Amino acid sequence: MTKHIPISFEFFPPKTDAGAEKLRAVHQELQRLNPEFFSITYGAGGSTRERTLAAIHDFNAKGTPVAPHLSCIGDSKARIAELLDLYQAQGINRLVALRGDLPSGQVGLGELPYAQDLVRFIREHSGEHFHIEVAAYPEMHPQAANFDTDIQHFIDKVQAGANSAITQFFFNPDAYFYFVECLEKAGVQIPITPGIMPMTNASNLIRFADGTGAEIPRWIRKQLAAYGDDSKSIQAFGHEVVAKLCERLIAGGAPSLHFYTMNNIEPTRQLVLDLGLA
Image (cartoon, rainbow, N blue to C red):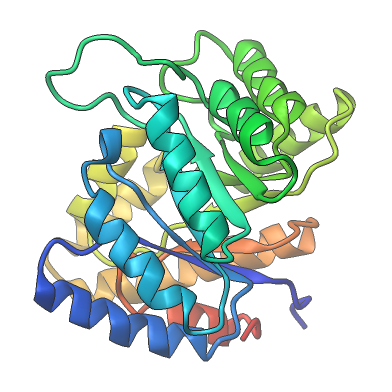
């Protein structure tokens, strides 16, 4: 029997009114699974700001806590302070603090170039009001020089005031357990929640992995290639692989699971149900 642990879901701000309407339906359905919170992403340099704020406002009134993503690279302290005050006024008390990607065409990293700078600024501006999530990379940040340097960058974020972390998606549970073990040896005790990417479309998954530095094991890539355009087989295979990954993570002591929904109900809902986590 699977141990019952908290779950959370990530959305991205829709680009159209039709997408916004679909997301409301997805949110309503996934809310029935009793997640701990929903997170909503934030485009590079605030490029999705208005639609992100609209989604946050919409969902914040529905009961389940919302954790807006907040990225700092290329943004100003004044603009971030404005958002922090807005979120606090709305009763939001959880954030996902990230460096983010430099907006296209922009030169210079801005006043807060790294996630640790953003976490420190949030603490200076808002005290302990916000529970701050940060990113973690069990397979190393794609721009990290080496594993030890990456671990130190993570420790810097914790020392700046982070409360917990959500990982980049991965398919190798040993990478996650080793990452957590290294942090524990360094005296870091905050919860590290695995980020889970359901597997539905092979080309999209490979594109996401290549863009984020996440490794898709060779045996998974080979099997996906063998299925070609057979989406039903890909989805069935993906469901089995991800469900077993989640079971291994839960058995190994993962504190919770965070699902990257891609603004879809399935297969996230079925995974949560099959794992007995609803």
